[in-house]
Structures are given as C-alpha cells and as structure tokens.
Image (cartoon, rainbow, N blue to C red; front, side, top):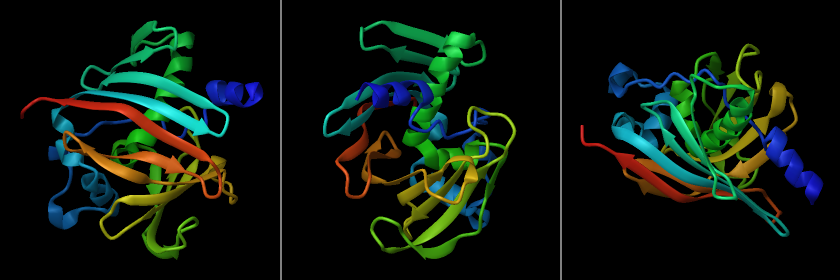
Length: 230
C-alpha cells in the first residue's frame, strides 16, 4: 500500500499533458463550417464558455478497495495562478510563470489532475501535438463501436514528452473511453471510462473514470466553476 501511494504522489498516475498550454480565446477558433474534430470535442464539453471562466475549484480523487487519495486545487486561469490545499489544511499558492524547483514538483501534480479534468480542452490548447484522422473502432471496455482519434505529444518540452492517448468518443463528440500509452508505446499503460458527465456553469465534465474489472475509480468532487458575464 505504502509503495503504491508513494508512486502515485511522486511520479503521478500519469502526468499526461504538455506544459506548453496556450489557452486560446474562443474568437480565435475557426468558423463552425471549418471546425476540426478536436474543436468539436472541445465544444461538446463547453469550450465556448471558456472565456468567461475566472476560477475552477476541484478535488482529484483515486479510490480503490483499500485506498483513498486526493488533492485539492483552485485554478485562476486568467492570472495563471494555482492554489493547492494540502491534507494538513495548509495552502500553497503560486504563479505558473514564476516557479522554483519545489513549486514545479507541485505543478506537475496540478498539470496531471487538470488534464484529467479538462482533457477535451487540451486538444485545442496544447502546442506540439498531432491528432490522427478519426476512424470507427471497437472501444476497449464497452466493446461499442465508437469514433477514435489518437493524440500524440512531441518529444520536446513538457513534463512527460512523447505520450499518446487514444480517445474513443460518440457521435455527440463526448469522450466515452480512452487509452493512455506512455512514450507512445504500443501497449496500453492505462485504460479507463469517461462517465458521470455533469455541467458546471457551462463546462461539461466527466466526474468518474473507471478501469474494467477492478474496484478503481479516479473521480472529481467539490467541482466549482466561477464565471463572469461576458
């Protein structure tokens, strides 16, 4: 048990996304007639509302038979500022443009947890990525016939370069399952569902991610999206 928790805390379950996020204004996207698959997936999750978001609060949890693990975050995207609340109640706040080595360790965890929360937005936020053309394939968990794209990060920059994700999504452009492949290896490193979608101030978020045949649930609680009127 101790070994598992230590691995999760220090190396992350997977640290996934690149650290070169470029948050775009909705006005910078293409016209509806020209939307890419990535933009359609992002929009299905409420990306059109992103410009109005001032704060996002959430708790990242992993629950198994014998373990509960969590991290609490507040993110202020317009200020590029993050607050992490430790289990002791201590608050650590930092600006992502001014980090020392200790804060970078915390930021790795934030980037991981935020990626799980808002991965559909990273399809249009992140630079240095390639996205395959959509195909129709059998999803690994449900065995349903779903649309699939593969997101691959470049080998340069970020916390975990070169990783790949196979995203399985419905005709509504909501992700239903995904496969994470560390370093773009052929074998899956992690395969989970995307479920329990709920809308928070215009952002549609999958609150639960489960493995097949295991009592394992990566989930989000205490979600709050604070927006301003445009």
